[in-house]
Each structure stands twice: as C-alpha cells, then as structure tokens.
Image (cartoon, rainbow, N blue to C red; front, side):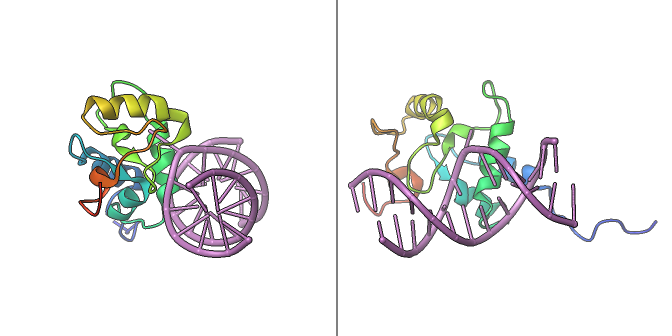
Length: 109
DNA sequence: AATATGACCATAC
DNA sequence: TGTATGGCCATAT
C-alpha cells in the first residue's frame, strides 16, 4: 500500500487536548505553553481556537486552566473561567488575573 | 488557492 | 502602566 502521509505524530487538536487534560487541578497553563508542549510553538491562537470549539460545559477537558501568558483571562469566557479557577483554589484577582504562582513556579507571588 | 477570523504573544509608544 | 501594531498558526469560506 502506498504511503499517504509522511509523519504526523498526532493531529494538532489531539495533542492540544492531551496537554490541556494533563494540567493538574489547581494549576494553570498559558496558551503559548500548551502550544509549545503540543509541538507547535507559536500556535497559541490555534490552541484558543480549539478550546473554543469544545462544549462550554460538562467537559472532560479543563479548558479553564488555560490562560493568557500575562496571567489575564480571555474576555469571552473570563467570567466562567474565573469562577471555575477559584473553585479549584486558584487565586484570581478582581480584574480577572491569575497570580504567576500557579502559572510558572515560584519567582514571585 | 486566497482571504478572513480568532478564548494569542511579544514589542513599541 | 496601559494602549496600539505586527506576527504566527490553524480552520472556515
């Protein structure tokens, strides 16, 4: 049988979902970070696009643990996201910003 | 195949 | 510190 595809480890959406699902409870990760671990550095937008595609509620994918690089939350879902994060013990500032404590590790608080 | 859109990111002002 | 600009990547038309 003739070869059809060179080598695609996994579809973009698959790797992204896998990474997001691997984020521990009470911890957060940035879109860029997810894209990076998914093997597509710089594909942060693609990550956001994928997360948007999945059902807004009752998801097996903890999309709310994915935030922006600067610690802010994406406007369209900021409200729901902040609520869910707080439910996990993640400290979210009033302006919808997560402390870097969970984003990276140590550095400052 | 080209254009347009978005839950983004880094840099410049 | 906060707003504006260009760039990057993955889909939908």
